[in-house]
Image 1 (cartoon, rainbow, N blue to C red):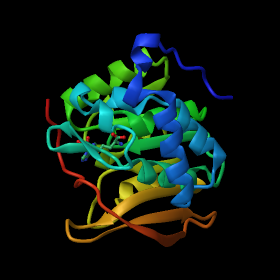
Image 2 (image 1 turned 45 degrees about the vertical axis):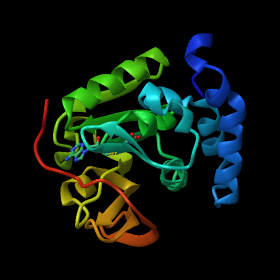
Image 3 (image 1 turned 60 degrees about the horizontal axis):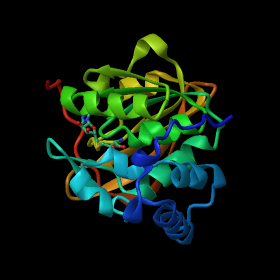
Length: 225
Ligand code: SAH
């Protein structure tokens, strides 16, 4: 069941933020290899321009990462689509995101009907993301914390998505994965990063696959207001 979005006409906007530009982005993602119609539909539905500063709204439907303040970025739509597509492969119900940022990735997961938990270390970004998600009527549970410790209270998760890069996969997050669950995360330093998928098997062992080269901001320690 896809939740219905609560959109005011003025929030949806006209011109460069209209449905037509969103449809064009979806076509571009399809050409770039995204095949899951549920994911393409979520991106077609969600007004990405509401997740960036007004001054950047006209660029919101380009397939590119954009600044959201505090030296952070809203991820490139193709990356959001690909990570979500991978995450959906084992039909998750409950998912954890580390790195809420603008809230866009969390919104995509919520609109797909998943139970979403998200953690962000920068308080200001989290407050803005919460406001957007609330305005869109999307139910996402969020916490201001260092996401490298996950969110044990609500685990284990069928899926964990990390939207900031670390030199290696974080063991605590692997612990919070359910059996059969998968973690999708960028791994690497500032020079070279890859999107990695890890699946947790019944015997506790893990299977790792490298999916694609990506560029993410770093996963940092501690919290900021
Ligand atoms: N998923 C976001 C992408 C934001 S960029 C979106 O859709 O917009 C990555 C985010 O991860 C940044 O907001 C950054 O502050 C956050 N981040 C980095 N290290 C973190 C950590 N240890 N715990 C939680 N969030 C972290």
